[in-house]
Figure (tube, helix red, strand yellow):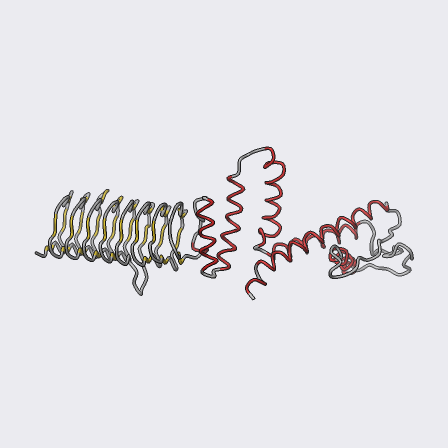
Amino acid sequence: MDTSFQEAKFASIASFSEAKFSGEASFREVEFGGSTHFGTVEFCGDASFIDANFSGEYTSFWGAEFASYAFFSRAKFYGDTTFSEATFGRDAYFEEAKFDGNAYFYKTEFGGIYGFLETGFIVEFTGGNAHFKDAEFGAITGFNYAQFNGTADFAGVWFIKDATFENAIFRGELSLIATRYDKLFIRWHSLEKGIVYDDIAYLSLLKNFRDLNYLEDYDNCYFEYRKDRRSMARLTLENILFKNPIDYFLQVSYGYGTKPLRTLGFSLMIILVFGIFWRSIGLGRPNEALDEYTLSDFEHDSILEVLAFSATVFLSGTRLFIDPPPLPKIRGRSRSLIRGAFIFERVLGALFSILFFLAISGTVVRQL
């Protein structure tokens, strides 16, 4: 037998706990003014809560069983809401639903398609956190266009088939600890605060990005993984004095091989700094020489020539691009100072050239 409460208004607590609806149950456009309880309710037919408003402090569908289709399209939940341990036997639609409080889906089982429509899954968790811990999704799952303004907890979730989060927005952290999935269609740029740190979660997501050929997402995820890994490392003497400083240098200098433009920027900055140094000690000024054997009899008063000399020294570090210029002889300046600066710039040139090639080969060349 079908049951309809369409457009009904409940001014205070509404409790349907342990009820059984043998046919279709319609709660379309119903106003629930107080706390609402559908705990352990059994819906044998379709259950419709389209455009329903749950205005109370708490809404419970804990342990509810939806044997057929469940519609929560455009439903609004203003307080905390739980679907924990509920079972959806067929498709469940939550498109354009809004959760202003915390939403709990612990150990919820979804046997059908979950909100996967051509228009996308536009559910919005506006005010609180979304908890799907240990939930199980048995079919294709779509959270397309979903907005998670708080923490999105998918720890322990099992996506038996593909899960899509295309164009979803995560303004809080995403937890994928012990989450099982084959393909997770999600983009790194949508994770504004990244994921909760866990080695396995990061490595699984990296593999997922690589398998989907999301190479830019892979690079960004790997970069954040290395940063988070260093921040979580134990504060041992070895880490403080050696590992962390080296790791931080690799982060800043070339983004762990993911950001070649950083290396290029540092290279240009080094050339400029040494150009200023060479100029300050007299290189390029009148009556000075760029050659340690023959004094120049003409003026080198252009800063561009000094920068060209600095670039030549820098690029000669590996001797792949150009041979090193002669060691300059500058009147009144220590030969050891000149030689030390000359060697130091060449060493930096060799180091940053190697880092640049590594970053280029790991990003640009990889995509060719």
